[in-house]
Image 1 (spheres, rainbow, N blue to C red):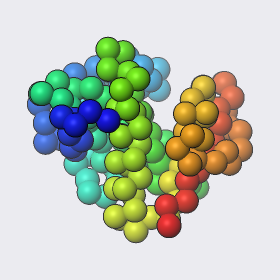
Image 2 (image 1 turned 120 degrees about the vertical axis):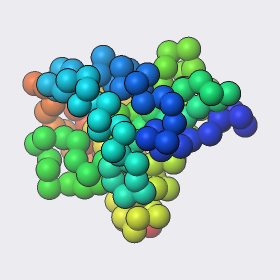
Image 3 (image 1 turned 45 degrees about the vertical axis):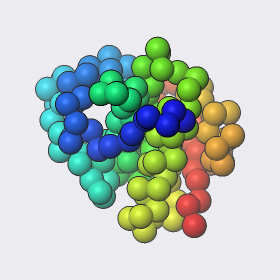
Image 4 (image 1 turned 90 degrees about the horizontal axis):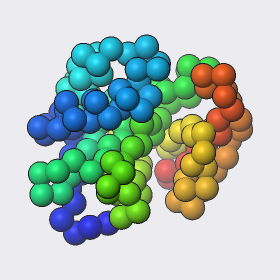
Length: 154
């Protein structure tokens, strides 16, 4: 992680519109969200309890985002809370930003008293496994197989 990087709840930064555009283009539009709904969610997801959306920034520039959420996978509404929507801008990848965001959400969940955190991923299971996450099964999202993963926080 870069020493000048900070991770903050996005609601308290000027990056809401930028990050909303990233998330909307990457996933949320396909899930049926309107851009204005994405912006509203980010403004309201201020924490400290889920939902809370975080942004990593450096010198006033947003680098990436991750969300501590109450639900993420429609087929598994029985599981909560979730690490969701981890996304780093292409120009800032391979600098430890995603790892720092994941660790930050894990810590946020721990501070709220949660003992386990969930996520699902299409193709990044090795990234999460290298950070202590364990495969918990296979699910389907948008008609495609995804890996369900969990991390014990105790």
